[in-house]
Length: 418
Ligand code: GLU
Image (cartoon, rainbow, N blue to C red; front, side, top):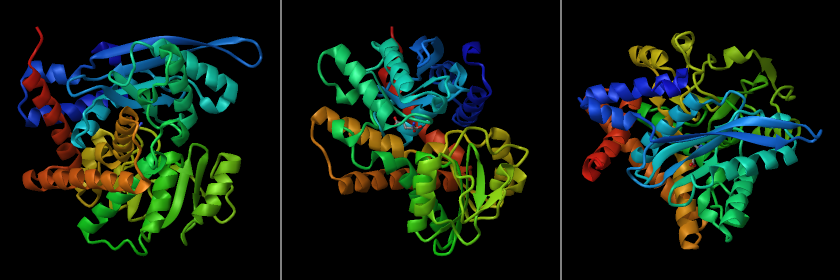
């Protein structure tokens, strides 16, 4: 699988191999489960505001098709490459299987800094990228959603481009759309609320009271900011947050509604009046009860894992902890890890609800969405914790085992064609 050579893909493969070893999976099945089914690489030419043309590299990887259409976000970030997208697609497979969704995993991305483009350039990029994916995506084939650097507007442009091509509206082709065109109530908040819910469940498990507990958040986008607000509703104080531009700290607790307005206007947490600046590398090392990495992969590594001072590590991001760091955290035994494929699954669970609502043209109240979301997350948490305790294994290994087993089972039931 040299095609996907990349440190993030290597990480996803190592996590998978640990599960396959435990399950004594035969080599043939191991390769079938690990290898992404399909990958598409496209060049996306875009006319820029200054009249020049730039060409961006775009990708979509579909990891397996054994349980239903594939599902997963689209990322706009300068570092996007094929191997990273393939790793993220593999994690989506285990995440969907763990939460019982009828999907395989997928992921897409364009190597671009969306903050450096105008809205017109972003729209042309999104529409042309979608056009290049026609035939590869669709409500019964592969259903994109937002991820890092994309949002509801991106999904609206994708849905429109696909629908123009089809000749009729196809809301079920993407999820995470604005509510006005077939999006689901609660989808935007789902990932962050899920992260906070599961962080709360981890605290209960440890016997920690939420009231007066402290949280630190790395990443202040859709996931980090909503997780922060939800944790505050549970009684925690958010004492520090960071984003791509820097980090800030206030031991008494940050005023989040005020910070929200600050970030909306200035696109940075830096300079927020009721806080002190904090060197970004110190953010993850602050003593706190709940640490939420909600930014990029590979943030918790062998160089900082010994120095984390949180009780709960609630992984809002995908792949924030390297296998070396995992080994250190497992040896330490004093940090309760809620692994990414469980912790941030709220987003794709409500994406599934959105897809179901679109296919039925029958829409649910926010209360119904949230009730069903928390029921699914609770079930996945209880099953993961149950397996971890029964077999004395780390939460990540337990969660990945449950996901991998379900995909393996489906492949065995369907057999090998021809
Ligand atoms: N990008 C999100 C994730 O990593 C959501 C995917 C989706 O809703 O399909 O889980």
